[in-house]
Image (cartoon, rainbow, N blue to C red; front, side, top):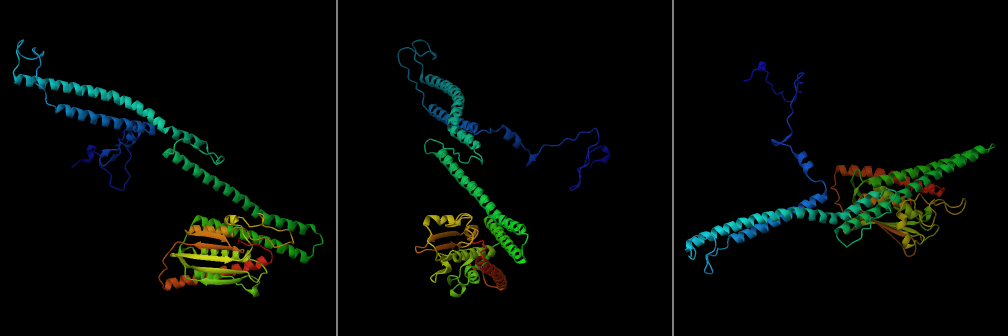
Length: 475
């Protein structure tokens, strides 16, 4: 038992802060330990070579030393196992043998002499082989350094070229010449990545430019309407009311554009929630009214069960955009125009397919329809001269949102033109097992029907707005 008055230091209990050292007394801190041993990780890291050229050189030298030592050891082992020869040829005795001149030593003496001579030779072989191995080790280090530098020369070239590449000159490529080896394959892969990055940067710049133009157009229109109304000193109440209605319509168009952009960004960000959704139920709730009495194309539906695991609101947006696109870009005023919707499973995958009549679409322009702000047969703004033809055909984001939603769910989108005009779009989702029925599922279905009713009302409102000459978020 220690005495506290003797000046000994007792460790503080666990959880208490240590007392500060008295003035004038230094505190010694033990080095970090790992399992009772000092932690030398930092020392090892500082001693280890950080250059891959040095590491390759040391690797080559180590392999040479191991192979050389194994070869010398094998040679020494073979030499040590040989039987010494005791034959003495000629009439004279070999120098160093015991006995007088002209006398032949007895066999035991010859055997002892041969063994001593072999031991000296083996020792000399071992010494000379060690010296040769040491000399060749230094030579292997020099040769390994040269060979490693020659092997890594293409990597240094690629590193210098990659450092010169930035976001402003993504068109530059490594373009490494040489045989089709691993380094050439790596350089070609890097060039392919640069090509994809360049395409993504160009698409992003084009998207920003198009979005800026689309957002500026309603603002310019609103400003022009207000300026015209203010410049007329004798404006009546009816003219001012008409101007206000046009400003409101332009604001609604801008609001729908922003909503479409937010939906596109949300779908590209990924899924935040996952629920089981039946495509058949969703399409049945969102299916647009059609027929001779509505002024639109006839709508035919063949709906089979197709369960999908995903975000219900994004899936509803996908269905609404596809249906809106099929109705909007259909043949107007034609009794033979129709829209056909099919849901079901193909090879275990839930599939939604929509076919519609309409104008003939060139096959090479189908892929462009899924790009943001791309419209077929119109300029990028999609406008017609005032008072002539149809109004602006949507915002050019409908099919882009469809692609983004399908990609976020792990699905695929395929589209091809119909020979007599129109478009066929097929959306396939990953296979999933339907959930077990229960009280919770009934409540989710009720909530889904409520969301679908709101979306269907929105769809009807958008169609009514289109008849008044205001665009929507469909492509």
